[in-house]
Image (cartoon, rainbow, N blue to C red; front, side, top):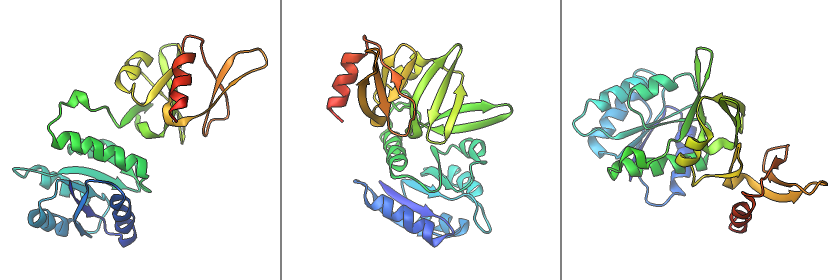
Length: 237
């Protein structure tokens, strides 16, 4: 997959270049420091994917994305920005993802997996979302799935516990389990945990089993029905 990096900050370009160099099947198609240069580079190098900053001097990333979308064979676009206030506008340009700097290696790898599915013309349903949306009044907050540690059902809502706190979403735990079953494991009727967040399994003084997660202070109850699958998952960590 040929990737073009577009950012007006040399250090940001260097960081992305370093992250991409660690990933298999990636070829750097070039770099650009502003919008006009990005359009010229796309015409010259024909990248499969453009990693695009939003705030740049002159033509900003949104305008670049709109111009690329008008091409007969547009590249895929992923926004990489230090600002999270442009998320809705970004998805209106048909960008496939929105990464907030500093970009983490795990999130980047997940984004590239999604891009490969698009390039392979995989059906949309075959590719799980990379972000969940939480509404806070009139604001929409995007939560990277890779940052989620566990999901807890409470009445009609699901509380998403993630690296930056917690948010409430109006989705069912069952539908989330069906969509993200490869990433999350059910440990109780009301709880899914991220497999890569699992740290330990223990018994409390009353003999009840509890899961201990990385980055989570409270232990989570494990039902006896879920215990065999949890033990099996932990053997493969």
